[in-house]
Length: 493
Ligand SMILES: Cc1cc2nc3c(=O)[nH]c(=O)nc-3n(C[C@H](O)[C@H](O)[C@H](O)COP(=O)(O)OP(=O)(O)OC[C@H]3O[C@@H](n4cnc5c(N)ncnc54)[C@H](O)[C@@H]3O)c2cc1C
Ligand SMILES: *[C@@H]1O[C@H](CO)[C@@H](O)[C@H](O)[C@H]1NC(C)=O
Ligand SMILES: *[C@@H]1O[C@H](CO)[C@@H](O)[C@H](O)[C@H]1NC(C)=O
Ligand SMILES: *[C@@H]1O[C@H](CO)[C@@H](O)[C@H](O)[C@H]1NC(C)=O
Ligand SMILES: *[C@@H]1O[C@H](CO)[C@@H](O)[C@H](O)[C@H]1NC(C)=O
Ligand SMILES: *[C@@H]1O[C@H](CO)[C@@H](O)[C@H](O)[C@H]1NC(C)=O
Image (spheres, protein in one colour):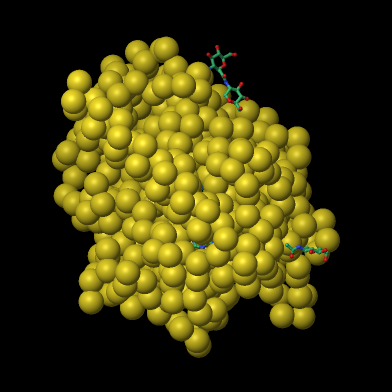
């Protein structure tokens, strides 16, 4: 009884404290002319809704900047009042890191800032920090006939995506989204607004291209583009693998990806249907050219596969086709999901690791029938991949030497609970694959944030050998961790 009373008194005190803090921070923001969401308003309710409903967090305040000055004043208020600050662009972090991954942050909601312009003379697009991928693709294509390679989800925000990688169906051909970054305008923890480019604050630009959520808030992007291709071929293969053929299938894919895959071939292996793996991809050229380029792989795959009729598409049709929507010009978030996800960046998947992957796939995963799950194995690196052509140390993105990027995703269709007993499903899959591998052979991808990794493990898996340099940069640009979240890089001088 006594304990219960004390707890009750404690929670009243902390609620009161939270209300006072909210009033103080809201006042600091409104005094500076920064728009804020009023708690309980429709805007608050929209902006506080996480993409991953498994991980809801309550911000102390939400500012909604329309200008760089508003972002700067938000950071200054957070600094002055000792409240941690988190930028939220598209809000699609798997771990709700746009909210800071915990209660009590000042969330800087950037998604009202989504303008895109293009300077043809310089070949530079200027993009505001809350633009979503589908909107960026639409404006660049419709107005200017230009394109950038990036992921497939139209609602994902440019900032989270470009700050940590950005892999999609044009990445083998053209590289990661972050490879298109020319320069950025950044609001730093001390409240200054600076440019980061190859000539100015180049260490900051290095950190931003791979670990960018750690050093400041990007307020504007300057991006290079390529001419939108007119003829692309979407292709697909239903693989028909079973437990006795899948390892040979993976080894055939690995040999092709390492040695024979032309740069123009972009593809992944995925299973969205419990035991029915397939290939989906995009070729830069005609269906006839694709057939020639892909035949060496088909010749070595286990028999029993079916090739679908390839489709010829232009650039924006390909973007739309792989989005699973009819229209990608989005300025609002995706419908939420209730899920847990993990990832692996791998130098290869053969021998015992491949056997373990396959055994778990057929013996364990295929028996998980009460919910939706998938895996995707992206062909990320390899001899001709544009990602691998950039030196590993040129940016803080550390996985350029990895052949594959694998995502594992497990979702419940209700929006209420993800049972704690279900985490073991994906944990077990990843553990069995990595068990035989030396640590130097694998890591994981910061854009598929795994909320259950400890800080030290996450830092190691996301950033690998670049971690010490990132820790120094953190000590330089955000020593007091204003931009803290549970997996943010720890400052070390
Ligand atoms: C449906 C879906 C499909 C996806 N498909 C792909 C894919 O094909 N390829 C791929 O590579 N990834 C993919 N992803 C992963 C995606 O790239 C990441 O979730 C990405 O980080 C989301 O960016 P965001 O801006 O929407 O997220 P947010 O939650 O807004 O931000 C993510 C992180 O970046 C920080 N941040 C946001 N804006 C800024 C800023 N301006 N300055 C500094 N830090 C900032 C946040 O604080 C947070 O830590 C997909 C995700 C989803 C949900
Ligand atoms: C976006 O551009 C339009 C048209 O120029 C302008 O009216 C609007 O204020 C801009 N929005 C922001 C957030 O800058
Ligand atoms: C390939 O097509 C045949 C004929 O339609 C079908 O029976 C078989 O199941 C298909 N196999 C795969 C792997 O899709
Ligand atoms: C697995 O697939 C191969 C190739 O299609 C087939 O020959 C074999 O019988 C299958 N094995 C099982 C156990 O279904
Ligand atoms: C097998 O996988 C490992 C990574 O675990 C990789 O380093 C090696 O190159 C692969 N071997 C072949 C033949 O692809
Ligand atoms: C979960 O939430 C989304 C978005 O609000 C909604 O579209 C969906 O129907 C919900 N699912 C269930 C089972 O309530």
